[in-house]
Image (cartoon, rainbow over all chains, first blue to last red; front, side):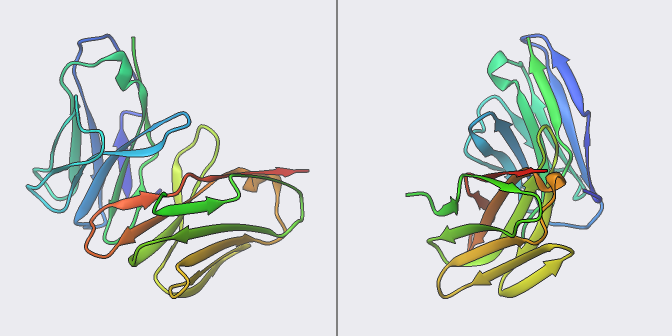
Length: 109
Length: 109
């Protein structure tokens, strides 16, 4: 998955804590996406961005915020984490498809 | 009916067998992706197709735009090919990928 870097790879949060996941790409892609993957659910789109300074809601945006201040970075924020946000989070960037990051395994206790 | 249908959902085969996974979609697309995810692992983009056929090592992907169908073939399958294979399409005028439900492939030594 060269080209898309996600940090951190693992995190445990307490309910109510906040955190930011960082996605960075060096391929000059316009489109970037944040997905969550839960057992038996497949990939669900949280938010996406079609260019610097733009963001849009996906299927499951509630409880998350995003920002795309620089073209190469797409940040996913959890302001007040809930156990339902325990999941594996994947970032992807694309000019017309998908290069995925390696994922962030988040546990909210 | 999902926009993207994959078959089979599960496939178990002996090492060395020729594997075919199918993907059918119902909308006009600008690109189709085949993705691979090993258990507990990240998501790797294997192919992006808009027409014809692509080959990488033992993997071959084909697409028939008129029939709205794509296939992923694996020749001389190996236990390390055991993974979930996901078909995803980007439809015309849509900035987001639509995912199939995935095919879980298990190759037995």
